[in-house]
Image (cartoon, rainbow, N blue to C red; front, side, top):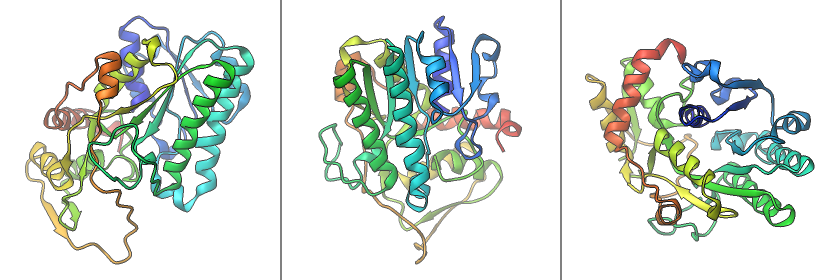
Length: 311
């Protein structure tokens, strides 16, 4: 979702774009995400864990957005070695490839709000403690440290972003392990109820994918951000139950059901979360432009039109 949205924006701005994707079934790789730009880009099917792939692509690259990853914090806790392999070893392979060929690219690494884990205060700024509650969060934090190390030790030009809860067009819709807002949209479009455990008062920061992509492009083009880490969210706190009702309003006839938490339900509650985006705003002047109401509406419209490409 995020990589393809960046690609669409970059093509519009005249860039020559290469996309590397392993097309692993669970992680959202979908050729249709490149609809409208496929003939304007180079697509390479390959894995960041393969050192030969990285070296063949990075030498002449000006900007490298590294969004590859194992994306489920739940799966990271049940299969930690797969998460380690992709989210740590894979990124080390890419960084080594850049070092070995003397790459001059600006590297933008997609980290996550999950590095903060249990939240001590809101809004969360970049100095918040790291209270990781998942292997995924731990490995994302390790990724940040890798990128910073390669900046300081080898002179690579890196910047990292801690992404809040992304949603929008082009996200995979086959399972609910990544992106609950989009999953609720699928359920609603199928005429199924949206089930909320408990009161649903926990708040999240939902960031629309086009706003997110614009922020990452802005950071890539701003030399003064080298070596830094930035929160990337909407700076708006939305209770879970309110998000569900926004989806229901966008798909008339959708029922919202609230039930008690099942005793055997796996759950990691970080506490309410909202991003402090003051640092990125000061650095590149970026602020999100899309309200959650507009973002939900645009996402529903997209999947109504292209449902057969994602279900």
